[in-house]
Image (tube, rainbow, N blue to C red; front, side, top):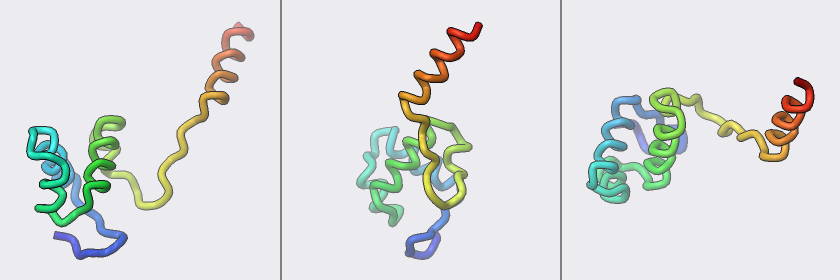
Length: 84
């Protein structure tokens, strides 16, 4: 397993096994403890998997992408309706 530290990286297969175990009913905290990771990391993997599939688990380290704000989305949607 990867060494302890802030910038640990895990293979996608490792993340998928952890996600499947947690979703199967083993529970996030017990799975995380057994694998030596925080429950927050496992929750992040689950969210990424649900939102983006396997690509979400292979994100490069660094800041998380910022989601488009609702007001920007409304402006884009309103502009598209009025221009066509």
